[in-house]
Length: 313
Image (cartoon, rainbow, N blue to C red; front, side, top):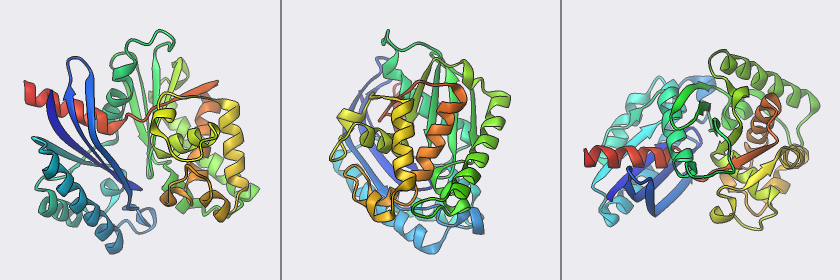
């Protein structure tokens, strides 16, 4: 087992996983997993730049993570940055700040790389499940982008498109409750992106849909009737299309305060969760999925496994 630290900095959140990992057995012993909403992608879709206040929120989270990594004595650290920092003109400022705090340079990975990590993290522990038919479609609904990956034991095809929950919210400014016109516009945007995905990724051939990231886990928590967020209850929960449809409708009809009062809701997701739920629902409708298998293991776990493999080779 190798002790590693993986940091995933996305459009909406920055997350840390410190774990002892064995890439050969697929065993991963989690020591510390954290998530902070920093909204690094604030207004990036409109301005093309990372806002100063968004950078400072992110650097403050990095300082907290640096202390945790030092405390646990991780021997290898990898920091990956995804959609928002790929798109920003001033991403060099972001890179310099991360290096100063964590001592490692963030890798601004491509959407395809992001998809590979997400697929590994989400499916490695599903290998022995006889109740889940392959191929899998792993869908990682982030803040700026959504990754689609089809594969069995390895990735067959992958594509990233710009329909994350933050980007959809900023692009269409849905009110609380959302209007029919706003919902229709978001549907059209998502459907156009799904058309692009289907050009290269056979999403309709998948037999098991695996959903990742905060929009999916939050929808699952609401569907399960949880009073507070419970990772153990959410991980590998199977949520039906009808449940996703019901929760999405409730979120779209709710006021901001009503969404904020939901027990499983992280405060940083209140204003973007409705758009994230719509992305999930439209994907399920497009491929005819009767359910989504929800995973708490994702890109962070994939990074951790790769780090451990590098250490052992």
